[in-house]
Image (cartoon, rainbow, N blue to C red; front, side):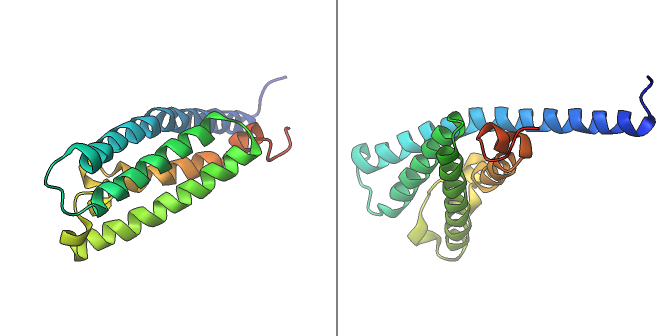
Length: 154
């Protein structure tokens, strides 16, 4: 039996969306651990090894960011309901802090300092700004939610 044009279009769209979800997953798999390490090492260096630090807010915020990135990575790695909820919560928290700290860094830059979220993540290619949005889109994708056991399998 030949496929109709509508069925072919639906199959192509489904294949395209599967590829998009796969690409988003690869981005998250690489970027979150990388940012966790880079911001964590930077924060630990500034907090404990760098001399002459007078404002500890920026390295502390970077350390909080590193913990968020690491926690989200753990949530992405385990396909369990608790891990999905953990990741969603962390990504929402990360988004909130990125917007707050990014805004404050424009208004009172001397207080905020050079944190990972300064200017909405400009030092990190704005990844801290759009990375949690990518993560949330990925986590709420129906096929990913099924992998976490949050929707019934078809």
